[in-house]
Structure formats: structure tokens, C-alpha cells
Length: 110
Picture 1 (cartoon, helix red, strand yellow):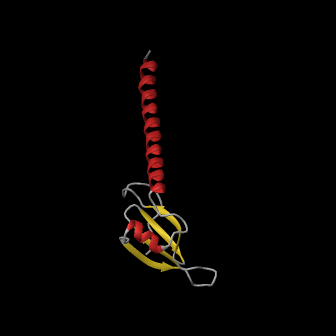
Picture 2 (cartoon, one colour):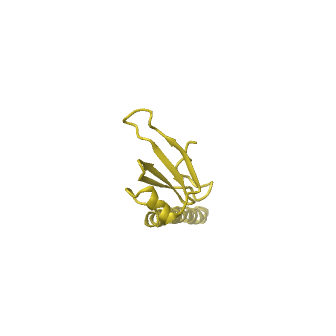
Picture 3 (spheres, helix red, strand yellow):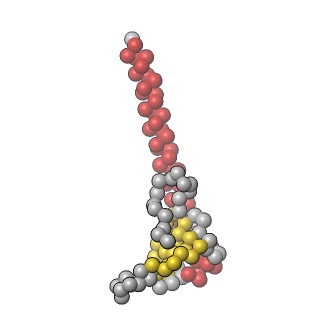
């Protein structure tokens, strides 16, 4: 009888942990989908990005260009995402961390 009393709270605890993990994944997926719908797209020019999203919070120093096959990459930081440009065209958009505790991409190298 004592084993059943112990087993029930343990099973309930496991169920709560699994439920929290699932809801956290859902929130991350929702955040990623929201960003994809409201972020610059590959191929847009820098002027198009500024026209739609305004001036960035920060323009990071260009990286690359040491060799001909390594293009110069410019990075613009907005509140929710960072835009990567090659030759004045968007090549990628990366979501910024929602909070310091969020596990995600490392901050850009400055």
C-alpha cells in the first residue's frame, strides 16, 4: 500500500514536468513563427529593410572580406532580430534572445 501512495505523486510529478516541457516548446515555436511573419526576407535590400522596420538599434562592425571568396557581412540589430547583409542584400535573419535566461544562439561577436 505504501508503494502505491508514493507512486501516485511521482507519476503526477512526471506528468507536470512533461506538460511544462511541451508548453515551453510550443511558446518557442509560436515565437519563431511570429518572427518569420514579421521580419525581413532574404533578398531584400538594406533600403527596403529601413523603409519597413526603421533604423536599427545598432549597426555592428562589418566582418569578413579578408579574402576574395569571403564576402563582407554587415549586421544590423533590431529589438527582436538581427539582420545579416551581403552586398546590401539580406542573407539571413536571426531571432534575438527574448530574455537573458533563454537558451539560444550566442550573442554576436563585437
